Amino acid sequence: MHRLRKADQGIVKKCAMLQTAIARETEAFELSSNSVVFMFEPSETAVSPITISLAGQPELTWQLSGGANWFTVAPAQGDVMTFPQFSVAMGNVVDGWQEETVIVNAQDANQTYQEGVVVKAYRGALEEVYLPITAASP
Image 1 (cartoon, one colour):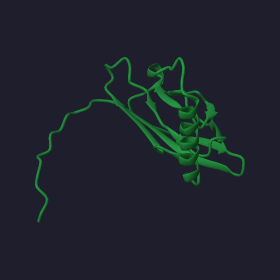
Image 2 (tube, helix red, strand yellow):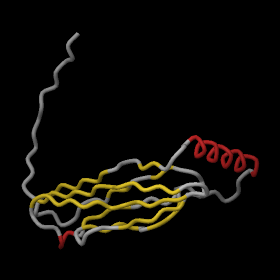
Image 3 (tube, one colour):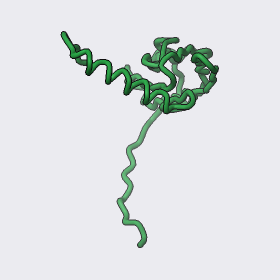
């Protein structure tokens, strides 16, 4: 993130108007993804977190409900400029697949929204598979 010490107020105002116009084009609450998938081998001690972004009106706020002990989400609530980050709690993951759904409840000045995010984790042996590149049929 870049910080500005002094900004031309005309530019700041134009940027704010542009952000508002873009947000108003979004008719409803949207998530960048409705699923989060972690895959790792038992020998791994850490997995990179995954962030999902949200879109909606500038006054949109949201909060999460649900979860499991094998992953964390931070923050658990915020506004349209705050994005939840999903992380695996490595000590609580068992071998094989695990799945849980987290509900994102959001509201703006006029409406409430509810979207599910499926969180999956696979802990086990992973194999790299190389597939040939083929040309599309004419």
